[in-house]
Image 1: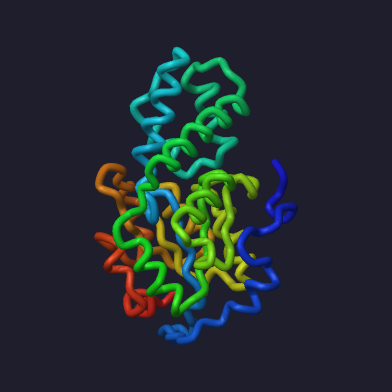
Image 2: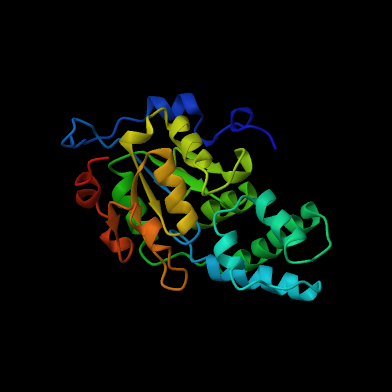
Length: 251
């Protein structure tokens, strides 16, 4: 897999993002730091896609004679496309090449999204509130093709200065690579950025990258206690994601 440095950052270019990275209003934290950007996860934070991913992958595994381990979904959340395709190819006994698995599953996901895009209630409003205050980034485990189709269908492409897929970095979550790439694309330092995440692997990735973490756990896919302990805020829903809540953080 290619290094993140060999892939252009989607959304604005890194140089363009850096030139637009100063927020309209900054709040200086206790340590003299400022919050300069917010980086969102996509799946489970802005779109209720984890159930769709599980349904599509489970069906594909069943159709091809594989076995679905009880902890499969927890393992898969946050993995990059090459990582989860390899897991399905090898660990669940499909006997098919990872590239074939990835193509089939992503095609099915695109078909499901085309029928019904499961935007989480409050997503558009939260992005509007925070995007009017700070530049926004996206650090997602979805493949680039699905990120672009989701943002286009939802009319959200303009909201993000930078979007990065774990396809475009060496390692998926819980490694910090995708968050480091997003922050780098924004032209900022991790300690001045806030991440919004829902899953165990996502929370671990954002914290490992050095961002202040806001947890938005999904009831059906509750993150581990260890991962939740890394969050500065645990929000019940997107309505709680307000500029005042973010400004209250000391990254």
